[in-house]
Image: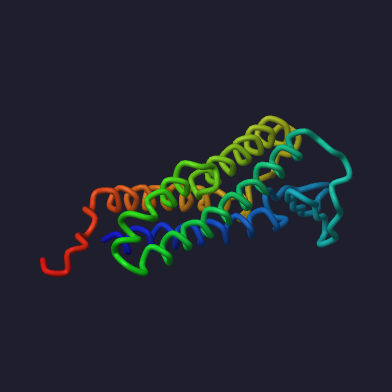
Length: 186
């Protein structure tokens, strides 16, 4: 059961990491019509008529969204690495898994480098982006919608929180198992 929970948490964390990277790197957060042409907008640049241009102005909501998304990617990466190391090192023998690496699971879950924390950072980024987009761009452009990169960001948040639930359950399973006795006769 422990391997299933830890493996499920790691799998969800890896999927969340991939989706966070794709969501952060692509230019399809919002689609709208600009002067009769279709336009796409991402975190780093905007595209009109298939010609992309870098964002030249530094607006606080762009900077905050970018920063939170990059921190989410880094945090998720660190969480996946810690989760994999705890999982692989903990499988060498039962004594190590139940006794020695409880601290690594504790660090993995409660310190900021785990998938639920990255999900929280991405949630902050998407909340900022959603609020500004709806209040500002929603009034400015009539024909607009959120695009697939934005939706992938929300899916990554759900997977990051699922990874945290799996890892928490694995941690509880690890602490609930009694340490094996060292007596070979029993």
